[in-house]
Image (spheres, rainbow over the protein chains, first blue to last red):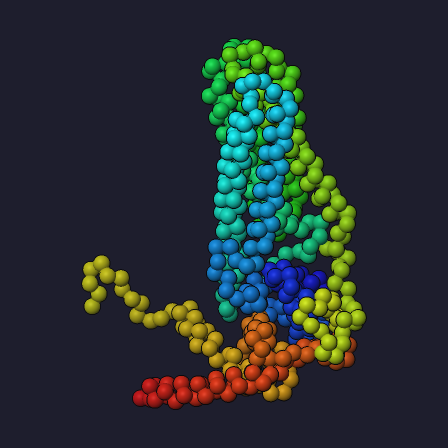
Length: 354
Length: 121
């Protein structure tokens, strides 16, 4: 049944949620009909593969159920796009509010007026929001195109191999939402880090000799390590997105990127706070030093929280979703009735028994 | 004669071109073919086999989504029926489907007559 489960999921995962239940029932019934007509069994993988190959590539079948996919971001991806944009913008609002609050709390000096600070924070947040939406749009347009390419990979008449189906949802399955969020976050981080690195590099020549090593070690090196971590993370998420699952090497890349990032997120604020007095006594402007310290603390706290949160989520997911092997598509006759099923009936496909 | 700088057209259409044109030609008649066979309720695989036996081969991956779209358009009704150990989804023409089939049949006959005349040597 594994191939049938994978096939059905590969098709229905590309459909709108309200369609999935009914299409799943219909597909399973049709696959079993075709198997029965051939005198085959759902336990015989070769026979199942032959039936699925006749049925066609999942992307093509799904496209038949959801016609009109010539979009920059098609209907099957749009809900995910909306979700990613919403989460990203909410995160930006939260980060900006946190930055503003911490800055107000710690930087009560005259030159650090609340009005200016609010204006700066809003400008930065707006710029970051526009950048985020653009990056997310580009990633989704690419995703949409790659889906179309996948759908167009096999031509009519060409034999499609069902064994190329992705694994069922499980601990190794890469969630498209998580992968896209990871990819977007890494892209934004690369851009923002580039800006921070440039600002620090520009400030370096004006700094006194005793401050230069602090900026060089704490900021510039930290930025470079974070950029490497972001690039590694982006690569891991992109590969996982394409392959549809996490493999040991992509998982290792992600862990390495997370470890690098956590190291920097902790090290930079600590180093800046420790050397705060030296920085304030230097020729650097007080605003710059304060914002540097605050930014490092806020970014460090958010970075560590996000990484820890995602790791906990992934760990919980691995514990709670042992479905890849066990299978929760348990057949049940509970939903079977004469002409009683409706389009929104969420009952599992009865008769999917072997 | 092909002038300088003018791209020469292939002398023969490629297999791929023929395949695409054939697909487009078939796409227009598949709906009528399906509607023609659904006076009596029929499930997807059965319908596909019946059409194939009469010379109309339709891929399952094309037929099942099409049946669902026709159902959403109100041309087909559906009913899950349990037979033996499994349920099957039966489709049948609705009144709207019967009217659509009659209209399409009329259109087809008219087009067919025109094309017969056009293609006659």
